Length: 471
Ligand SMILES: O=c1ccn([C@@H]2O[C@H](COP(=O)(O)OP(=O)(O)O[C@H]3O[C@H](CO)[C@@H](O)[C@H](O)[C@H]3O)[C@@H](O)[C@H]2O)c(=O)[nH]1
Image (cartoon, rainbow, N blue to C red; front, side, top):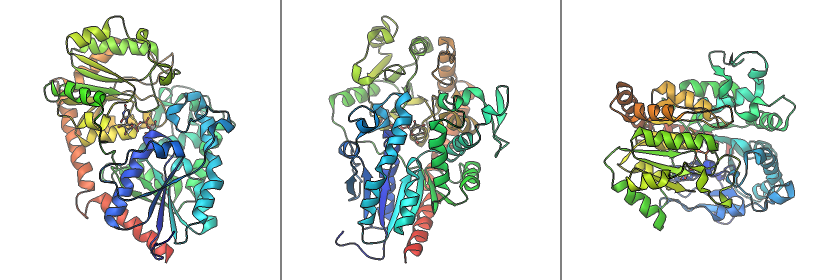
């Protein structure tokens, strides 16, 4: 690696192979360069994911390094290099397959001549062992929130729902946190402790205890409790360096242009945006009730539509997934737009006509919405989303409308219309929710305002620790 400064670390960024995990790492590279211009930064991933990266306009000159990955060798579809390419039942095989990247990652790190600082996704926490063997410094980066991940990891360690009968149970290590059975994702609910899901996440957690530092995509002032929970869980220095937000990707595609034009034709803050992220969806009964509830709400909406849970976007979209005549009625009245596949979410949320976001409570979606002061209608579906929803409800910026996408998690159209009306309407609760969302937006902005913002101070503190350790 010619031209490297032997005293400053070469930072290796290694996000997990999931679309929702990459934007925060890209934004981290931007902040690292702002603090240390000229720092060598390499972004490591698989060939397909690197090929599909759309680097933001402000992207610093990062190097890319591809690790060979053969999903088919692990019984996965050929070319499935991201969670978004898979069904939920294949996720665990994918998690296990991702551990096969270790020899190639190790060989890449061992070839770097200057001191190395690995910043790896929590799901790649095994890189802590590589760092130890190669004399590198190591940090785990959590692209999610502190509370959400702290609860998620605690549930995997203790499986508290298996310890106690009844619908509600406390976390053994954080008894103030009481969960309801409907907040436990499907794979956790089925876990026995001897299953591959539990084994994978317990490996992740024990590796997180071997790292030198944990970086979290959150704001110290907003998540003191969650950050303390992580510090207790892992026993390592933990730095809040968020929000690290996806930058609106430049796009001149006709589809994106027509979406923005559709928004242009609506009054300020009048449109509800609906999306369940890059890898989750709801079931067909829920789609029907959601559609009819949106119609009943009387408010304009823009719905990013993925096929029902268990079905593949590559196999196309079927008209019967939506109620007969629904799309035509909505189009004629200029009431609703259904976007199939991928939408320019960051641009939609930045648009003046967008007034609220119905979300699965993926952490990036939460941050992107609150960054613009937009309140949330929550519908957590998997992973740590249920616990993220608890946090944003506590912040007073979200009405949780529904939970889960199993057969037992039914939702009725009247509940949809009511939740949308509460958040977007001229109700006391709606006004309060919007006011609090504005407060969170200001706290998020302050974290990166000038060198004294709490996240700027944290990232600087982390870098100094790394620089001291590599001298
Ligand atoms: O049509 C779409 C759909 C999504 N996005 C973007 O994709 C990202 C989605 O991220 P997120 O909201 O966090 O959802 P997931 O993709 O589901 O994220 C995974 O990763 C998150 C961070 O760890 C976790 O919080 C979630 O539970 C996990 O499912 C965001 O940046 C969106 O702007 C688009 O641009 N267009």
